[in-house]
Image (cartoon, rainbow, N blue to C red; front, side, top):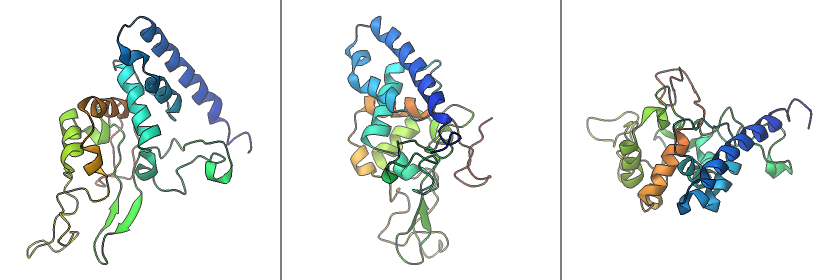
Length: 222
C-alpha cells in the first residue's frame, strides 16, 4: 500500500484518541453504569470517521457507534456499494487492514435492483446529517423512531401501484408505504434507548452531500 493510500490512518487514530480521552474524562467523573459500558468505548474505537460530539451525550454516541458499526454493520447497505465501501488499500476481503471509505460512509446509493421485473430499483438512503445536524437529511428523533418502529417510507418514493398510480410504483402485494429492504421488522423491537443512541451517533458523523437535488440522496451540508 502506498503512502498516499495510508495517509488517512494516522489522522483517524488521532481523532479517535482525542474522543476517547474526552469520554474517559467524563466516565471517570460519572457514577452511572452506562458511561462505563464496554460497548461505548468499543463504539468510539470502531467509528471510522471523525465525530462532532459537541453538545452531544458521549455515552449515547459511543453506544450508537457500537450498534451501527459493530452490531448492525449499517454501512454494508448504506454506502454506495461494495466497490467503494472500503478505502484504497483498506479492503479486508483482500487481506488488507480494514479502512472504511469516509467519502461514502452511510451516504447511501447502494442499488439493490428491482423487487420484481419492471419495478423501480430500491436504493439505500443517505443516513448522514444535513446542515441542521439531524441525521438522514434532517429527520427529527420522533420521525427516526417512527421509521424504526413502523417501516414507513416518509419519502414516499415508490407508492403502491394502482389504477391511478402506474409509474415508479411497487406492484401488490408489496406495500409502497413501507421500506422494502431495511430490516425494520427486526429493528422495531429495539429499546428506545438504543434507537436514541443510534440517532445521536448519526447526528455526530460528517455530512455527505450526495448527488444533486432533487435526488432523495442529496443533503444540504452548509
